Image (cartoon, rainbow, N blue to C red; front, side, top):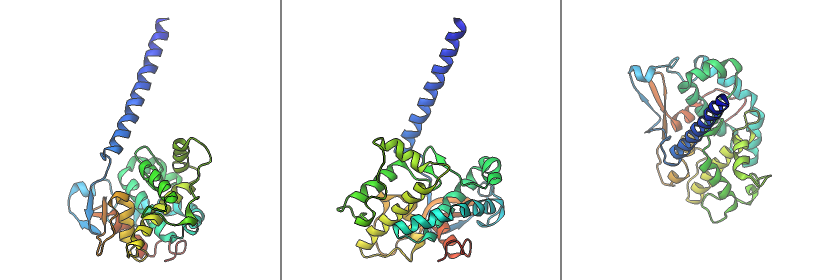
Length: 270
């Protein structure tokens, strides 16, 4: 009987700890505590041990990280092309967001890369503060869904896209998570991401600005979120800081760098 009480107590403590952990995670996301400090411009050159720690080099498309990422992305080329066609956004623009999200994981989650991502040649899939291979936050996903149905929203992309995210069950919260964080099928992770890009581009187009030729700006907006998307002349590239060796890239700057490069050009032409 005493042994049973001890086991019950341990189980109770474990559930309480798990509950506290997820509650703390929810609070951190909603209070903005998980937001990564950003930089303005494409990149910063630094020369300090902190900037170089854990990185194989300073070139973003060099080393084991890049080779593993290329192999993983090639598995999803058909999916990326599919969602690109559905949302009328260039596939290479979607790939640019994926490349930066994954390089950020590869260079910050070294243990996971060495033990799982590199040997299996799979994309890093987030399930806590952000979801899926594209790092989608729950609040952003909910707003993407709402914008699709609201013709009065500046982000409304048009009637053609209204039903792309229609739910199949009544439990929208669970279905949303299962869609975006699905490790075996990244279709919805890409679809939510491309619809975000579409909605932001629609907002800027209505204000008289075309993002189609401004991948660095478009990608910066992908990174900083709806609330910071303010159409204006001469916007700046920037976003979350991503250290690779002695270079600290901005999210938008690294996305532009990939887009302009010859990497994965056969799979995703410009």
